[in-house]
Image (cartoon, rainbow, N blue to C red; front, side, top):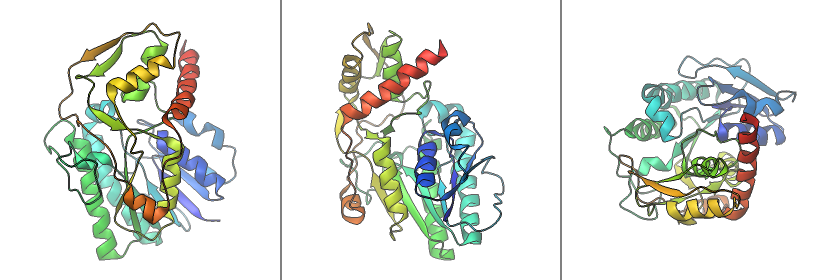
Length: 315
């Protein structure tokens, strides 16, 4: 039975990865300090004999008894509302946390996959964004704590690969959505859905013409699994290239909640907010035989249903 550590495993993406790797027959160790994750996300896995949870901060020394085959390093705040509230923690988990995870991979001779991000491209001057693009990031802007933490994490991961021969993978994750996102997550889809369900104003930043390319979580998890099992060490984009403006997305979501009386309102654009975001997934297609399969309407229906129940449970 392969033995796999997933840091940040109680978060949105981490919990879906825990679920997938348990189903694949791995012994899964989920590690999370629950700063942005939730034990509720993994509650359904706790009875599984091949799953365990460790409440721990990965910026400390990580000790795991016995062998370890794979490490998926997903520990990090991942939405602007979180990393603006937790700037030092975001920088520490991207730097010190990545260092500790890589040290563990070296000690255990384990394969490590780093969760990086499309935010390494910043507000891009190239569109769509290929892995060869170095990015346009403001290192001292308010978003820099996340962008630069991930850029440093990539550099550190490649250093461990080249200098210590650690077997590493790097995924650059583009905007992803689905069940288990938090109601107060702060990202566009959770915000639009919960505002529409509560008949609150749907807040669109700027003119709403800025674009994102949103990928349903099961597609992302499949891409992650395929990349982990590949033999490719450089960064790989995983995301859905189906680009949509924020205003279009808000209108789509409102239309899918017909009982909503919400109106769309416009708010000032946050500092350094990227104007475009679209992955070039040519490499993922050729290397991993991967592409997204879930239509946005189908993914949004599943997500809305999840948030409908979650908002009702809070009443």
